Amino acid sequence: MPGRWDASTKRLVGENPEHFIKWLVPGAQFKGKAKHKTPNLDNRQIEADNLYQIFLNNKRCLVHIEFQSTYDKQMARRMWEYNMLATFTYKLPTYSIVIYLKKCSVTEPQYVGTFPNGEKVHAFWFKVIKLWDTPLEVLKQTDLIGIFPLMVLAEGGNRPEVVEEVIISLEAAGGKSATELLSLTYLFASLVFKKESDRTWLKRRFKMLHDVLRDSWAFQEIMQEGREEERQQRLKDQRQTLVSFIHMHFPNVTDLAQQQTETMKDPEKLQDLILKVFAVQTEEQAIQLLLSVGKKKKKK
Image (cartoon, one colour):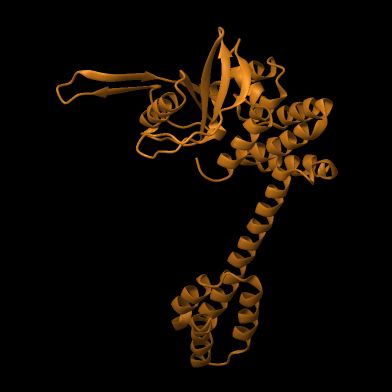
């Protein structure tokens, strides 16, 4: 699960893995992250970040937690392969769980392998949690703050009042972990809030927490992503300005303008080109100026 969801969910579990174990495997004793081992099975790798040691009914075993935000038709097979690899490598029974973050199609939580004659040779089951079908109260009643940021992804959770409830709970808990969880709550909410009014409220509410959050890794990541979004929007606006001007004054050069500006990634250089384009008098001058963009790039 690439992108913002991937890094954020790994960090979320990493802050309080014992809370996830208490939630997902009632009665289990959390013993820590599984120690890294190199599996001897076709050189495949195990991601230790997803694997935790527990004791259940006085027996040592493993829990494999996977997050998913989109449909994957190979999910069942992937879970089977990972479970088999973990079981083989650690010589311990492994329980696999997929937590779906956003509403999407979900494969059946089982994998059945068959022989060419139709006989079943493998049968594997895993647990699936669809957050959008999980009532808020189910997460809230656990009293496990480590999973509270997921409340905004639960059934009916993408609302300001839910975010406010999470903020109050995390502020009451205090500590560095709570600060990181606040940042993650903001990140998750920003990804699922749809109404413009809710987005505006979210930005305003977390701006009030700026001094508390500014040193957290998640907040720094959000700020960096925000700056990148602003840069991309600025580039988009500049390209539109330049192409519109060219189309109005030198319509035969419009395609060239679109092609050349798409290659420019620096807003300052693109702004400089716009000013130069505004000064050209003829179509030939416009063509030469636009072509010089490609020449300068090749020289570098």
